[in-house]
Image (cartoon, rainbow, N blue to C red; front, side, top):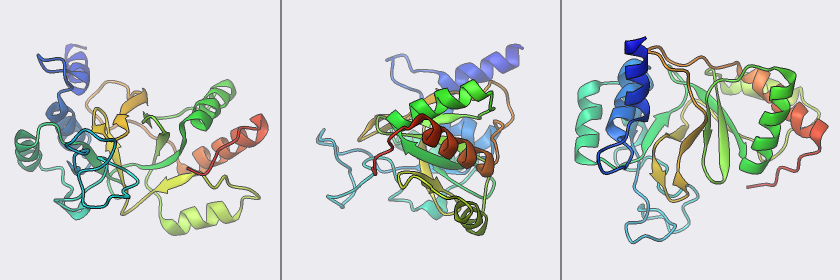
Length: 221
């Protein structure tokens, strides 16, 4: 129990100045959970709600790879430690797919209502990430062919659903982005092993059904 609680504190720990201890979280993801990560581009250094990358129209400010690129994502402890020692406030970017989870995301207001509806059904969910505008439900890795067959079988799929699969990415807690801090809406259970996540079929079926039954509007953003 002491070991489990210690790992829990490591994942959620804060530095002496009260700011999130990003390097500890990055090391937990990479070395204990075997999720390949890399540092993301910082939010606009001048304090505007924009991105530090050259794209003035960036749609995910401060929450995406830039230098290094996504293919550099790794679980190597030395590389992860070097990155965040030199860039201690850099967002933690997860390369989805492969050995890491994928995700299904939707706008925050619709996501909150959908999760409430799913809780009523007793469906088991894994970790859920949240930003100010969108929530992402982590799921087991899936292929584009698998996703295509799943969506083709549906009569209706909200256009606001997004799918983060092989070749995609997500910002992980406690990253600070141009849209605020990334947090756990549903935190992983403490422990050394990677968190359990459900199949994508179960999540898509349940989310679409919940949004349809509750009449939740999920706008296109």
